[in-house]
Length: 199
Image (cartoon, rainbow, N blue to C red; front, top):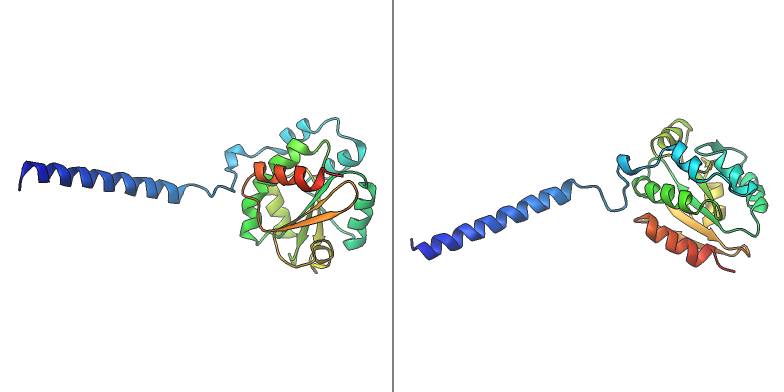
């Protein structure tokens, strides 16, 4: 075998090795939409950043990670108290993998924007409270969710049973519905500006 051929083969093997290592690292890294635990905010960090919020928004922050009852009428009453403000409603379920992946985006966006935008969750389709409460403990956010085992609230708000779904209400109460998960907080915040912080 000629020296040139040996060098060429060695170079080719080195390139293959680099590609294999890169693919292994890529496969083992979290999806872009997931927020690694080390980068998640703690409830105390979120509350500290939201101090001074207007009363209707502060009331949401005071109920962070709670599962609220009352059904669709309770959510409608809450939305009435928020009239004239931008509102983001995120429909999720504890068994929904894309919901789990986007919760980091909602945690960041709700903390960054929560002094002027109302964020609310709907836990739609969970048959008991234990799993969604455990989910919220693992993925804390700065706002409450309405418990919706029958999916009635989610259907009324988003016009479907699809999860995850996000509904943006602008200051005039007009809504825009986005089905599917948000890949990161930056994309979510852009859509909040585009659909909720208008009018």
